[in-house]
Length: 433
Image 1 (cartoon, one colour):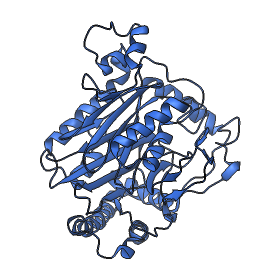
Image 2: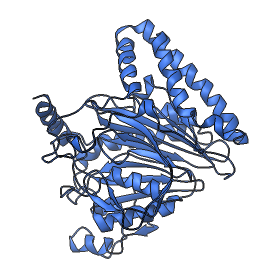
Image 3: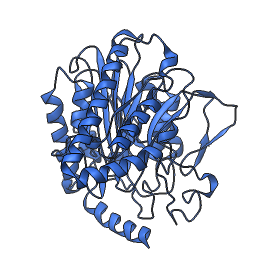
Image 4: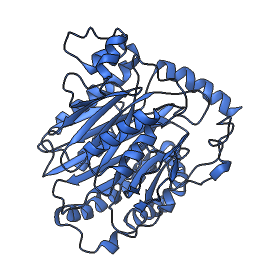
C-alpha cells in the first residue's frame, strides 16, 4: 500500500516538476592552481539510499556478458578501477570517477522526443560504463555514444512503477578538459570545454558549438519538422520542448549555479564547490519529495604525477553531511560502511513484474546519519554543535589531502583505507553526539 501511494504521489509531482541534479566543472583559469574541480548533487526520491562503492580494474574473457540494470550487454575485455556514488537498487551510477581521473555525472533531460520506451540502458548505466571503459573524457563520449547506438536508453529511473523516464546529458572531465554530451533517444551532440566553467541542470545546453554529433542527428530533426535545414543549427533550440514551462525550475537552478560559479571565478576550489552544492537558497541543495541524496566533489591536478582526490558524502543533504576523500591506490578493499545490502536474484528489481516490494537498502553510515539528522532537526543548539563538529572533521581531512594534492603520494599503503577510515571517524562523531 505504501509503495502504491508513494508511486502515485511521485508520478503527480514529477508531471509538474522535472527535477533531478546539478553538475559542475571548473577548469584553469577559473580554479586556483592547475586543477580541475568537478562537482555534482544527485537529486533523487527522498526515500532512496545512495551508496558509495569501489570496483577494482579487471580483465574479462572473450564473449563474457554484463548484466546492467535491465538488460545484458557485451562485456569489455578490460575495465578500469572505479569509485561510484549510486542508487542502491540499480547497477549504474549517478556519478563517479576512475583510476585515470575521468569524472562523469549525468542529468535527466526532456525534449521533443519521447523518453518513453522499452527497457534498455539507463543513463546511470552509461555513466558507469563510461568510467569503466574510458581513459579520457573524449573516449568516454565515444564509449557512451557507441553503447547508446547499439543498445539504446530506456526504462524506469525510479524504484517503483510510476514510470519516471528521461533522456540524459553527461558532464565528463579528465586532467585536461571537459565534455558536455547531450542525448535525445539515440541522437546526440557533444561540446568540448577547454577552459572556464560549465554547469548543467536538466535542460539542453549545447547550442551552435558542436564538436561531435550523431551522423544522422540533423537529418532526423529536419525529417521531424524541427529544423528547416537552412538556418544555423542550434541543438538545444531544435531538440528542446517548444513549451519551456516544464524546464522552468531547472532553468532557475542552472542560472543560480552559474552565478555561484561566477562569484568564485578565478579561485574555485574544492571548498567553493562544496559550498555551491550545500546552497539551499538556489535550490541546488534540493529538499522535498526529490532531495539531494548524495554529493561528490573531485579535485584533479593537471599534472599527471599528482593524484586526484574524490570526495563523497554517501548520505543525503550535503549541509549536514561530511565530504570524505578517496584516492586511487592499489589494494583498496570494498567500502563496506557505505555499501548497501545485496539481494542478488531475489531483488524485486530483478523479478518481473518489477518493483512489487522495496527491501531495506540502508547501509551502516546511512542509518547513523539518519538518526543524527533527526537530532539536528529536533534540537537547534545541539544540532548546531553536531554540524560544527562535522565541518571540523571535514576541514582536517581536506588539509591532509591538500598536502597530497600538492606533493604527491609518499606511502600508497597508508591510503588504502582512506575513505573507510574517514567514514569511521564520521560515525564516531555521531556516536559522541
